[in-house]
Length: 158
Figure 1 (cartoon, rainbow, N blue to C red):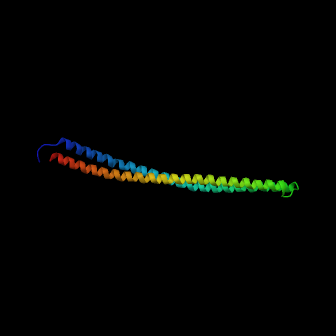
Figure 2 (tube, one colour; figure 1 turned 90 degrees about the vertical axis):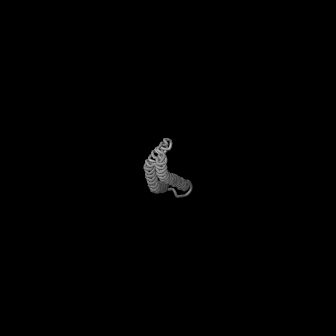
Figure 3 (cartoon, one colour; figure 1 turned 45 degrees about the vertical axis):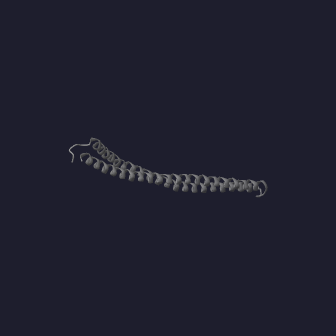
């Protein structure tokens, strides 16, 4: 021991400890962010299921409206003494085509929405993973900085 203190090394040591403490304190924030992203991913997954169920219901409603429309056209033709041929047949065929297109639009719209929610869910899982990695890195960095700071303080007195 030389009896003199190297204030430069002492300052670096104290700075290292303070920086390490700051890094360790940020671990909680990163973990909280990861938890938030996981919560958002869970909600996106629920939205996928709800969208699929709503789409299935809309498809049934579209089919029901189609059959009601065709049934009305058939009943009108029969009530007027017409046979299901010619223009009456054309109207019914057109109704089936229109209904098929409407049903396909409902299905495609539902699939697009469900896919968007699935992609959001995957993005949220990725963000949660990144936040967990940042928490691990900050923890390791904080411990390393504290150890380096302690070594610097000891060296300042040697």
